[in-house]
Structure formats: structure tokens, C-alpha cells
Image (tube, rainbow, N blue to C red; front, top):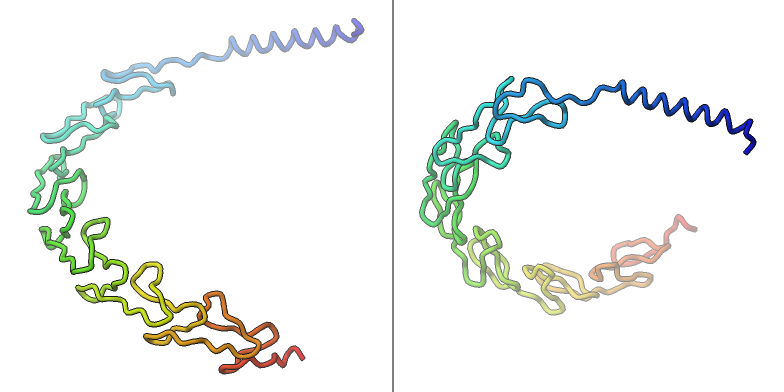
Length: 225
């Protein structure tokens, strides 16, 4: 490159370098927080935070003191009750667990749940009465009927599937085979009129394009004439 052109570029580069050096020297470095109280430490924001197990109150760090039957939680600024106790104001009260129940960790509520096969009844746990051909659900406090049976009141009754029918996906009701329509407790054969076809479900029919349904027939759409 021509020396006459190179000289201004070198001068500009030197000027920028001096400016950057000046800015770096002029910028104040982050200073650690002043007047850090006991049981505290400086943080990355130039302020201070209380150590684990202490809680900030204005300019001090006050110890978090769990009551009897409690422990410091993971945050370090609060406490939780031991298993079998629940929080009431500033203390931990023992949970009275009824028969067929167990204590659970909870800051709220009654502090216990019923064993599997039992459900909450008043202040205790009552047995879930499962009828023949029934089974406990995943939660263990309700019941469902086996496939092929349907819940009626407190019992499981057999699902009566008519001719040309089959159990549906959940197994507690029935559907008609394709080409048949459901009529109360039976499956009737669908009689397709001229210019009709089975719909998506296969249990009803529709008229072809250009025809309208009129009772049990498909008649030409007069608007298209």
C-alpha cells in the first residue's frame, strides 16, 4: 500500500488505542460492599447477602431459628416441620393420624392421607367397597368396573352387546358394526337409498353431492338446476 495512504490509518489506530486505554483507566472498578454485617457475605452485585441460616432484616442478618420438630429448609431463610407435624403459626403441631392412614409432608391441610383402599370420611378413613368385577383405581380411593361391565350405583353390571355389535374402546359400552345403526338396545341394518353412502363412522348414511336427504331418500338438489 502507498505510504501516503498508510500513514493516516496508522495515526487513527494509535488514537483509538490511546482512547481505549484512557477509558479503561477512568472506569471505576467494582468495589466490594462496605459495612457488611456479621453472618453475611459480599455478592456479585456490589451488595451483601446473609449466610445460609440467616435472614436479612434491614442492615442485619438474624438467625433463622426453627421451632421444636422443625428443620431449616433448603433456601436457608425459612423452616419446615418434620414429617408427622404441621405448621401452626410459629410452631409445629403433631398430626393426629387416624386408623388406616399415614402422615405426609405438608405445610397445609390435615397432614395425612388414607391408605390405599380407603377414602376420607369425616375426620377418618373409611374402606372403599369394591364390588365383584370391580377394581381399585390408580389413586386407590375409587373403583372402576372391569372391561365388559358398567358401573350402576354400587355394582358392576354386565354390558349386554347385541347382535352385530361390539364393546367400545373403554369396554363399558357398545357400538354397532359398520353398516348398522344403534337403536335402543339393538343394531339395525342400514338400508341405503339410491345416491347415498355410509358416513365416516359407518353407522349412518349421507346423500351424495348434489342430493339432499328427505326422510329415507336422497332427492336431487333443486337449487343446482
